[in-house]
Length: 274
Image (cartoon, rainbow, N blue to C red; front, side):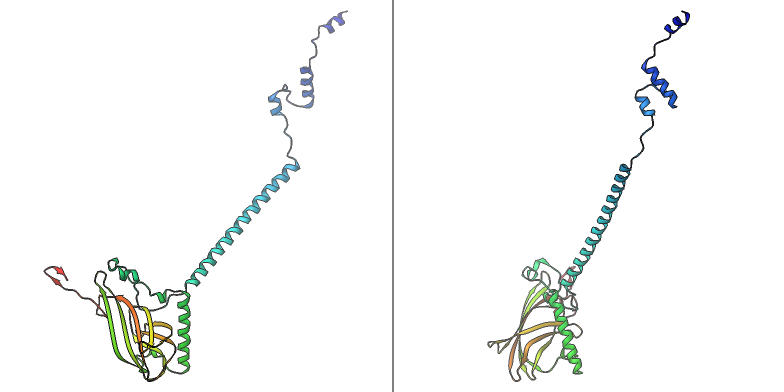
């Protein structure tokens, strides 16, 4: 009877007691179930699937960096190529000592624009072709063992000027002028070159005709030769001997501030410069 009474007085077994006993047997801290128990419990290990995803992300990132570098290099190469093509299209500037003046500056003297390069020298590809033709002409004269007529210290004597008709328009507002000259020429020896002195001016137009009224002679090209300060007119055919031709040149230039060509000077009177 006494034993039975003692068994009846034992406290009842609850589910919490069972869980605590199981936790003690498994070696855990024995924390009651709840958020703290879940946080303190062992975390699951990283699976192979997560590792594969991480590798793919790293690979995609590396490929994107390489693609960006490749695109940048291609863009740089294309830009350099474009600049080279632009420079080749512009052509090298021709060497010359002549200045130029735009038509707007001549029509509006108050603009006071400084002289720039002549149109013949600013045409890019055409200027390069003219330089090549000049070199070919010089090589031809070298084969003849002679100096070309524009490289000689004196003007050639195959042409003789008979008469000059000169017209000038002067603009004192910006010290420029435009001119037109008609020269009657007599041909002594057949030649397709007309050489005359010219320096620091812009040639707008050149025409060659027989006796001013007859058919014109086509001008192949023109160029300055600054070493001897001459202007060369290259014709499409040779001028005939004992014939008379008219050379017409339209040009413009600056009124120089030094003792050269068509120049200006000044003096002071009563403190005023005139």
